[in-house]
Length: 397
Ligand code: NDP
Image (cartoon, rainbow, N blue to C red):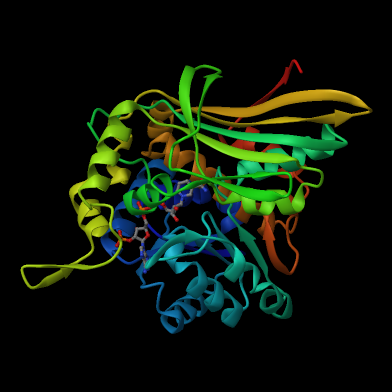
C-alpha cells in the first residue's frame, strides 16, 4: 500500500488532504504535517467526519532537512507533497533525495530575503533526482500547473506550432472584506507588486508593475480588467513549447484591492527587509500578514466564481487557429465539498492529481520536471473527474 506525506496545513493543504482522502485507494496511509500541528488536527477531524477516513498528523519545521528526512522515514511515505511555502522548496527537495521518495510542489522556490522567483535552483537538482531514481514534479497547482498541462494538450491535439499564448486568471469571488488575499498574503503581495515581465521574440520584456491592462470577457463571469504580471510558468513554457513568439500572463484585480495594495506599498508595509520598531526587529510584510484575514478562513464567506484558462494562437495544417481552454470554479461549491474557497481548491486538486499520476506510474520518471513535459491526456481526464472540468472554445482569428 502507498503511504503519503503532505506538508503544509493552510488553505491549499486542507484541499490536498481532503482530496487525497477521497482517493485513498491511491494514497493509502496519509500523514498531514505542518509547523502548527493543531491546524493538521483540525483538518484531520473534518476529514474523518466528512469522508470517514482517518489520517495521521505531525509537527514539522520543513526548513530543517534532517528532521524532515527523519519524518519521511518514520511515515514510510512514497511521495511528499510540498504544500508549505515556496521558501521550503529546496530543503524539502533535498530531504526527498536523501530519503529517495518522489516530490511535488505548487510554487517555485523563492528566498525570503529576495522577492524573485525562478526555477534555476530547482532545475539544478535534476541530476540528484535522477541518481536517486525519484520524480520531482514542479508547479502542480493551477497556474503554474493546469495552465502548463493545457499548453501541452493544445500542442498535442490542436496545433503544429503555437505562436501566441495568453494565460488569463480571473477570480471574481467576493469575500466581503475591504482587503484580503486568497492565498498566502506574503507570497501574493510580493508577486503582484513586482515588475511585470513577458516573453517576446526570444527575450524578456520588463514592464512597470500593473502597467499593462486588457479587458477580457471571461465565460460565466463577464468583462474584467486584467493586468500583466510575471508568472513562473512562463519560464518553463517558453523553453518547452517550441515555436512560441510571445507568452504573457494576466490576472484580474478589483479597484479596492489595487488601491489598498498601492497604499500599503507607499507606506512601506510590503517591505521584506527587517526594520527596528521599539527595540524589536520586525519585517513589515510579515506583520501585515498577521493583521490580514487568514486565507484559509475565507472559504465560508466567499461567493462567485473563478475562471482560469489559456488562449493559444498558431498554425494547424497550414491554417491559422485560435483556441481557448479554461475552467470555471464556484467558490461556494468548493466550500460545500472541502471547506475551502476556489483559489485553494483550484490549486489543491491539481496537486493531488499530479501525485496520483506519479503513484500510478503514469507520470513517473527520474529527474525534475515541469508539468508540460509529461503526456497531458491522463491529467486532463482526471481534471474532469476530480472537480475541475474544462472547456475548449474555437475563437476566430
Ligand atoms: P498558507 O500560508 O495558508 O499555508 C502555508 C502552510 O505552510 C501553513 O500551514 C504553514 O504553517 C506551513 N508552513 C510554513 N512554513 C513552514 C515550515 N517551515 N515548515 C512546515 N510548515 C510550514 O498558504 P496557502 O495554503 O495559501 O499556499 C500554499 C502554497 O500554494 C504556497 O506555496 C503558494 O504559493 C501555493 N499556491 C500555488 C498556486 C498555484 O496555482 N500554483 C495558487 C495559490 C497558492 P503555519 O500555519 O504554522 O504558518
